[in-house]
Amino acid sequence: MWPIVWRAPHPVLHWVYTIHAKPPNEPLQIHWNVSQADIVQAMLAHAAFRTGAYVQLGPMVRRRIVQRKWSFERGCFFYRIEGSRPGREWSVSEEELKERMKE
Image 1 (cartoon, rainbow, N blue to C red):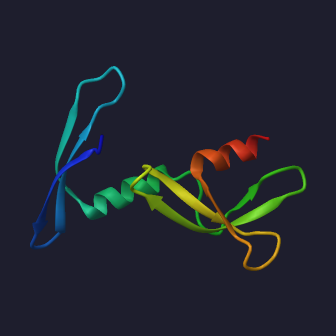
Image 2 (image 1 turned 30 degrees about the horizontal axis):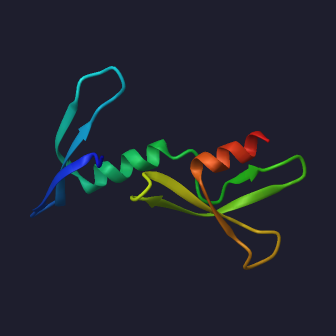
């Protein structure tokens, strides 16, 4: 289910949204007139990693995050991680990246 249930153009904010959120064991929360800037700020606040940061993927493997992108289809961040050689970057979801860091 998509949390954005309605959107409309706005003369100053460009777009405003109505968002339904249903936390576990809590009632439905409805947020009216949410701007794109508010949505982007919330996404950035919940991102686990930032572009340019280094992640430890094993005892001897440390890689830099080259790019971060939000996937609206999957509802999570995807990170492009530098490869062992130039041009060999690979993409991984935030959850998968966290799992790889635990190994």
